[in-house]
Length: 548
Image (tube, rainbow, N blue to C red; front, side, top):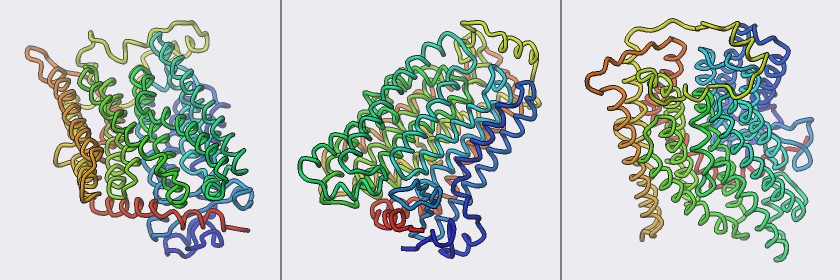
């Protein structure tokens, strides 16, 4: 073990960590929170300043995420433990940055930057407080990835949900209000389950630190162990709901397509938060093999993930609009990751993490592209068709009057060609076709599944089959939509695309291409991450032995 706490966030585990300040790990939480609070004090008409401040914050978060990723990547045992108030775990609150958390921070910050820039081109001014809500959402997501205890995980879940409630309703419209009410009801229900499960676990173990919970689980009496499993099952239902695992995913295909495009793009990462927590729990449970917790959780995750991929694939085949296609693609990604966690196999999890990165970025780009493609067929139903207000608001009406005719960015030439090219790249990644990262990821998953046992189990064949089938379903859905949008005979398909709309789409898809070009280093990092998760001893020791 490398004791990083004695040397700030990194100490000389590698030379790269020496120059980092001790408080960098808390920046992904504090920075968006502080800026969000500051923006509440600013009038909505100071849109340029707020847009610039928000974009600078997102860019800083990308830099901070890269620093943390680079820090933990330098050593196989790299764990950064940040103790708030200098109180040691399990009594104090700790933030833990390991390979998995740093990876999720990186994906979140990149997606948030692209979504925010796209929103600045117009959607940010549709109704007030967009910037603050967006930053609070980012803060909640980052906190969920970093926290080391259940109570603060619940707090960060509530923060990100509060931000998502406001953002889903952003822009008003009857469809958004209807979907928003369902979204809020479902997530309030899952939050109650979260509290119930955490309460039972605390009553049995006397602690909420996730590492300490698993340590105490190994020492429970048979009666308490049964109660602990019941609490863990209730808690898992809450996470499965947030991950969109079938049949708890009925709310997602309804709510995501009606949100504004930049909000939908940012929502893609929300299902990964639930899957991340499940992966973290299974990884920590693998460190206490005598409890049988991995054997208890794995079948549910494997079968639930497979069912989710099948459900998402059927939804893809039935969808004709890009937002709905992207929503079901989100379910396919979440289901694949959850099923991979259920296998508890390093190679499968490594391939699923690689798939998660590329598909998250590509799905975000698809949500952004949906609005641009809809301009080619303005008479058809689209995300623009749900913005009619259902209630009046003097403040909102004043904003719309002030910003009438407001445009940001310059219209770029060959916008239709740009959209067509971007659509093809996104389709290749999501369908898993060569030569981009989607193909490499699915190949890695299938290879990991079929080679995990000398004699294949039926579940292994089923998982390999549904992963391949989901790619075929995605290809059919996107080809059908692409031909209809770009190659319909007798139509003059010309649409105006502004630079601030094209830039975030280009960034996200360029990252997908870069993920393919630099597949070697990325896979090496992910292999080390999955191996690290399979042996959580160093993680647990770093969290519990960092005494002041």
